Image (tube, rainbow, N blue to C red):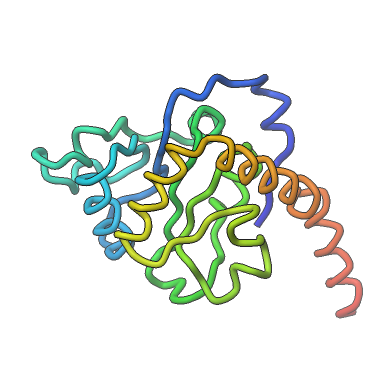
Length: 185
């Protein structure tokens, strides 16, 4: 799990055009996460990207604010253009933070709002480098707060990016992996 710094070189400074985004799948494999995104979308404006739009009710705000699938460079461009983005882990992750979104979003300098997990502190400092939430109401409150407190949001986003570029680049992570493999032999 890492971030490719080349993304920042390929996309010069991007204008922030989205306040809050979600990039990811909405499916049966993401049952709890899909329910969360649908519920939040009814209370707060979120620009949604990813697969699963056809799983949504055409009358829902989630459907109305869904812009379709984005992959690769298009996904990174959405992050670069977002003030903040929501992460939620797939149901099978249980109580552990373990997805790429943690590093993709923070690497792009987007403030990450992620579901609170047991080991999240092993990666980031909550409230300083990322912001966690515990339930839909908590997430709505945090979206509202950071929409209205842009200085704090920018400070957290920059700190998250700094941490990712220091500790979670592919170059750094591959060195760690080589070291682990060398010690096993």
